Length: 495
Image (tube, rainbow, N blue to C red; front, side, top):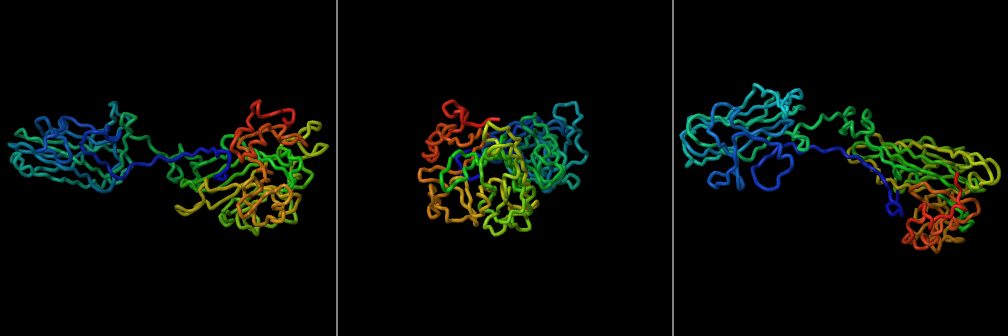
């Protein structure tokens, strides 16, 4: 839709959840920490602010218990993590002396969905990594700092299963503590803070397009991912008065068309298909009119094919191989080359404009427009870049186009009609299809509204229309709503 349209374009988009950066980082600092920090755990540890021992910032963790050689006594555990390909690092420092052994041991705990414990931790893998302090008997006067680094084991690199990294502190003799800070693990954080820190549920992406099946409208098609509907969950209404550039009877029922667009995009929100649905609700015209649809600023070579248009080989039509109209600056589609041939007349004048004759079931057409199904990353058209510009072609005269107010004519429009009769189009001022008092010849509503009976001016059925139009849409913006002050059903056609 046009960005400056009076009515709102209502659409819903779904976006895939993005995983965290390829690194788990934890620093023992006070204050506001991200929610996922809650998923770290420890046993036998405390936090110190003693500046003599703090490794980084204003506080660091330390072992508060007398250390033993049992790795289950004193430890820090990471959140569930999908391990990467790099390393595990942290900074450590000894405090106190008299020790015969100070050691750090790394183990990896697998997820066990059948476990009866609330953490669902399985038995640690037999594979361990060990760092031993070379001279633990030296006291705190040493105050040396170590940056310890372990490569992620080859068997666990880039693993699709979640693990916890368990950092255990072992020791014998003395009472010296081990300080630790700035823990960095190569991998993706996979604990859900709002689900008791259990692993995120498995992501199933059948077609491999990067969008989980649960969020993918087309889970088995990697070229499609999302549907966006315009004007939203309901249909909209187009109405035209075909006596332009004269005002005419101004009943806006020469063509009443219900419309809805389904825009199919890929995982990068690039358009791959557009399904345009048009329903001819009423025809109050003596002319043999046609309907065109221009995509403003979109070159026709962006479209691969057009299917479903209801054309009867009118002499004025010509098309390129992809189904778009030839000789146009922007992509144009002829939806109907003769609207009257697509809805049956049951007697009298017009179709569904007079209560004196039986009503006719409206005719629905689906136009399927295919774009590039696999544009290169960052290429292709985004759904919000589609500017729909529907217009009437009057009485088989190709150049006589009637557009919505403010919408540009196509390359094939005959400029000789501009400024004639009641029209005040001024190309130099980008003013299109309005009279001197801002009255239009086409209307677009983003909901279904009843249309006028034949020969009844729209101001009789919609009591605030004239004031709204004259104000250029600044007052009575809800003139079409089903309110008593807005409508007089005596002049409206209802089925």
